[in-house]
Amino acid sequence: MAKPRTVYVCQNCGKRAPKPLGRCPQCGAWNSFVEEIVAPESSGKARRRAGTHSQPRRLHEIEGDLGERLPLPIGEFARVLGGGIVPGSVVLVGGDPGIGKSTLMLQTALEMAAVGRVLYVSGEESERQIKMRAQRLWRAADGRERPFPENLYLVTETDLETILAHVETVQPRLLVVDSIQTVYLPDLQSSAGAVSQVRECASRLREIAKTEGLSVFLVGHVTKEGIIAGPRVLEHIVDTVLYLEGDRFQAYRLLRSVKNRFGTTSEVGVFEMHERGLVEVANPSEAFLAERMVNAPGSAIAVTMEGTRPLLVEVQGLTNPTAFGNPRRTANGVDFNRLLLVAAVLTRRAGVRLSDQDVFVNVVGGLRVGEPAADLAVAAALASSARDKPVRADAVLIGEVGLSGELRSVSQLEARLREAANLGFKVAIVPKQVGRRLKTPAGLEVVQSRALKQALAAALA
Image 1 (tube, helix red, strand yellow):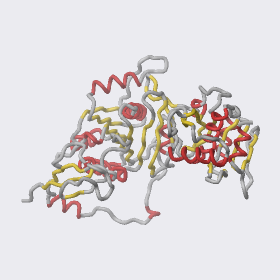
Image 2 (cartoon, rainbow, N blue to C red):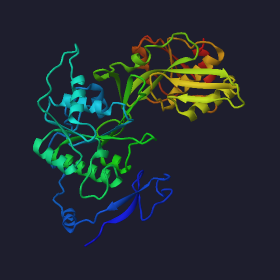
Image 3 (tube, rainbow, N blue to C red):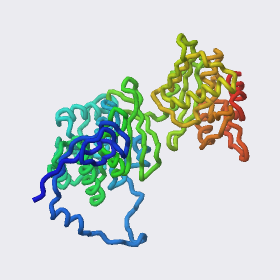
Image 4 (cartoon, one colour):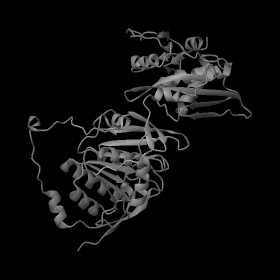
């Protein structure tokens, strides 16, 4: 009879090695190998895996509405998922501790219980704790308590075999597992949260989701680097990967899609944390600009695309004479390397001296802007602060800054202009369009500039 053997597995990528390694040769992570005991596979299980019960079918013979989705009353969540919950899909939701993952999942379970049976499995909290949170989340708008849905079932369990038995008994349409790192298979000789446990448990849940048409939501922990804990293969097993982002000290939460087999990637839903849980923000651009100080130097409005949605955000810039030999560069909400690039172009091409200035850039509301379309707004905010002249209060700035001081066009420019016009802005400063005609919304003046210096002159007029 084969004996269990000891291997060492990288927690980051899942690579196995016969002995612990200081640095993973596959992903490059340091001190990421953990000891794992692998149980021998029984011959019966091997024969079951070798046998096949599937049959190839012609594409036109496959029945069913492939676009069918379960309606989700939480509109922002439905937007990120692509329009609703796809039967048989597996969704992984990650985020920092205390950001609101369990709150969002419990709200979803409460709302979806009106459509069909929902089984909520928790491996971290007791049933009493979850009911207390549910009572707070399920109150009516006027504060009155309302009865819980009849189709919502709750269990606290970490043994996956027992969980699957409960699934067979309850026959739910939606299964929520909070969290995947607490679930384990008794057959594996390793503790819950180990690489092999996370991988095998997720695979078993995916298998039952595809065969039974059950929609599964998995809550995942994140590491200190901000990625979902466990092997990266976990993200390949599931159909959709969502991250709940935001600062715990701010009210706004951003639900971002980084992988979606049934919808647009990089889609974003915006929520605000209230006493009754996560509340949808119907107009995020208006919310991000609500506390803006008009005609204050160092403030500019950028239009960024999050998936298919244009968002208007306030970019703040501050320059101050440095007290040290090396001036500081601090970026909050924008890429640090893009900030260095924009500061260098401003100094060399636009005549804004920043070599002896500390530079600070902040995106209001906790949003992180990763696309180059915000370069012009960052440059305008810094130039406005350096010259102590405010940017036009009714203007938005859209464009990528090149190393030669030129402005380059960005994608989906017309959608960005429509959103700016809907919020009452009168002027849009954009790169000069070459070879195509730009459709301008009514009431919005579009100023096309070829160079950064020309755009700054229009913005600070």
